[in-house]
Length: 124
Image (cartoon, rainbow, N blue to C red):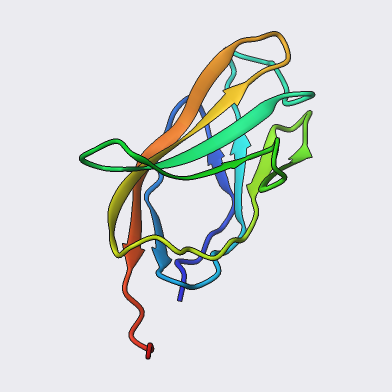
């Protein structure tokens, strides 16, 4: 079972620890940016999420707007979703971040924290 994922509203940078079950489909993760010092919307932005090994920094999984695994729901309100996927990573703690490249070329990392893959109780 995945952690319940209510839409997260962030001002500036706020960490968010993601927990998923190995070999389960993840829940839809919805994020909303609210930054009073930066009014750039998500129109024509590229969003990329990378999950990396905590110790070796090896890239384990990448999701993005370019491959359709991240979807901008409302560019003006800065709402985007990381769409559900099957978590096929090994049981352990990883790290992740979400980087946004705005249409003016500015690059910002807005979210980052731990990404924990838990062992399911029910398995073969």
